[in-house]
Length: 146
Picture 1 (tube, rainbow, N blue to C red):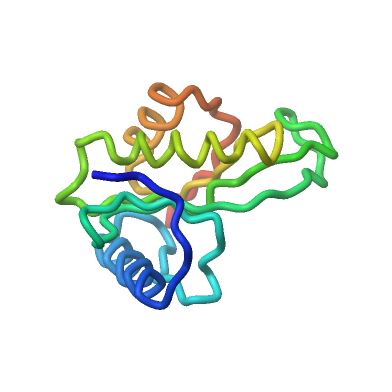
Picture 2: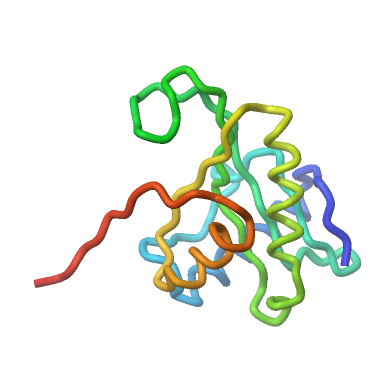
């Protein structure tokens, strides 16, 4: 399996959109909707099994504008927008390798790596991002239907 930064060719865009549809169909994230072309932004890192994309990560650089406890205003940041691996390819280290690739890229773009998640399995996400990859938990937004 190769992890590589890819260009958004027509074929790869179609594969990424199909993967986001599969992610939505898994029903593992609150409010997840399938991507359209307009949602995809470079850089995109992909886990490739031959020409088939089996996982991906992408994000964007930004300047922190609002005050928070963890990131000073004016800081250069890189936000991980999405990271997904097909179920059949999970538990093989691909998510970690995708995260490492996007983190290495982010180091060239800023001083902080950020992400927000709407997962339904917060334990798995905290284990992956905080325990395995050293991110700090900052806040949580909890809801309960009454």
